[in-house]
Image (tube, rainbow, N blue to C red):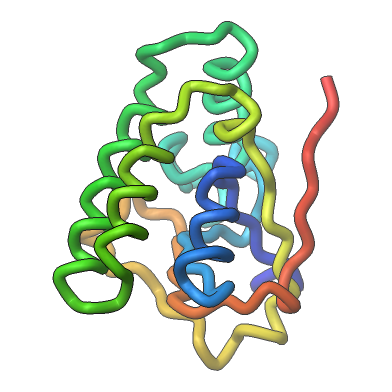
Length: 163
């Protein structure tokens, strides 16, 4: 039986990009548990791969920020994704040329405050009708992963985990 909450870990920069440039609608991948490694070994929830596990993503982003690592794989991938999205959104007429250029500059920001991880905690009942299961061919493993294409800011809380 699925839990009542869903979890997604993202860098703070993604939150502000969605807020400022996407009318505060958030496109996210999420999971039914924060840490698949803490789930029973015989449950589907334990089969979410590290690359999709919110706790693992949190740890990777947090470590990259704390150590000031310029080549953190997760941050590098998100930078590239933000730049590609900026170009795509501009080409579709969804943002202005100036917004595109600003987003590309923002993606190159090195201040760790922008890349610190935040966890979205989402009450499932608020998004159930819009929750899309990720096709197995796109998942990193057999565990359940979901996409919400239009998560509204009033449908989730944000937490940061202390040291």
